[in-house]
Amino acid sequence: MARPIERTVILLVDAARPEAEAIEAAARLVRAGRLVAFPTETVYGLGASALDAAGVAAVFRAKGRPPRNPLIVHVGDAAAARRVTAAWPESAGRLAERFWPGPLTLVLPRGSAVPDAVTGGGDTVAVRAPSHPVARALLAAAQLPIAAPSANRSQRLSPTRAEHVARDLFGRVALILDAGPSPGGMESTVVDLTTVPPRILRPGPILARDLGEEIGAVEGPPVFAARRGPPLKGPGMLRRHYAPRTRLDCAPTGEAATHAAEQAARGLRVALLTIGASPAVDEVRRVQMPADAVSYAARLYDVLHALDEEGLDRIVAELPPDEDAWAAVRDRLARASSAR
Ligand code: TXA
Ligand code: MG
Image (cartoon, rainbow, N blue to C red; front, side):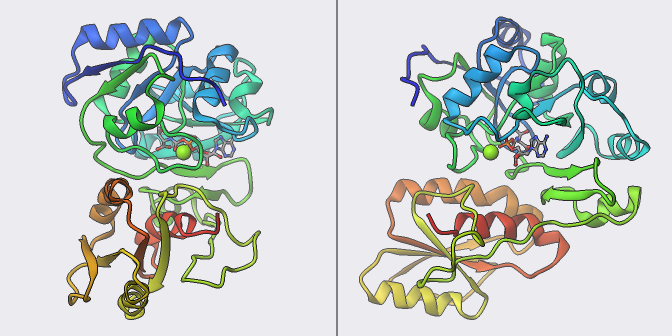
């Protein structure tokens, strides 16, 4: 594990009209191969020049990320995306036209300018044009594509606030641009356009049906098994990621309150995440989450970060309905609840 050695600076920036001096300072650091954490409309990213192999290697060290897990390259627009890809199929053009800038990542054949470090040595590259004004200003000022994973240590929750970034990465990053909470609160949809049919690799704010309207049927998303409670399911079915430190169990609506009550009766300190209003459960801290998927997604990581700080023994979450609109939330809850 790399020793924390950077003198991290945190700059407050206006989320709608970021101050030019702060953006210039960040752009200079990126051009010099240093690490800058910045807000996007989904979560905060940990950025380095996507054309600088040493800078990208520093991202992996700062995160403690396995080198084969590739990074998303952030660009200003489709023209910039074409400079880091080796092919730009019609499907990419349609999706970029409709959803960029925004929370959609396209996996495409990798351009020759992109170092191995970004793609994990693979022959595809993931590209996305973020819509957050701070990310856009940084990309415009740096005049470079910026490789950026979520700005958390590997296997931890993605950050939706600069405070979350600082907690994980203080001393490992040169600058954190703090523009307040990320509005979307959950990572972008990742769709692979190199397969037929295209395949959703990670569900997110752009739904399967949104993609389908532009490019026809898409496959996926992959479904992960959620942990309901002991005993654990066999490894291999489960993929822990996006996880709080506190153990999280998922249960269908109607069983979650009972599961939470059982844990509390064993003397554990338990929080129960309900979808919309629900009756109180004795000795259980109830957190009422929004009943619509977009608002729920915007709150989830923030709530999990806050519950982690409280040092509870268990978080129990009601599983949302198995519907397209809830696919991203279900995916993150399932991963967060997987065996560790
Ligand atoms: O919303 C987001 O996408 C945020 C913000 C910062 O843009 N970024 C983010 O990055 O979530 P990260 O590195 O935490 O997740 C990137 C995902 C991973 O699941 C990675 O495996 C996948 O994208 N990915 C990246 N490059 C890929 C490639 N060439 N082929 C397939 N999957 C790829
Ligand atoms: Mg991540």
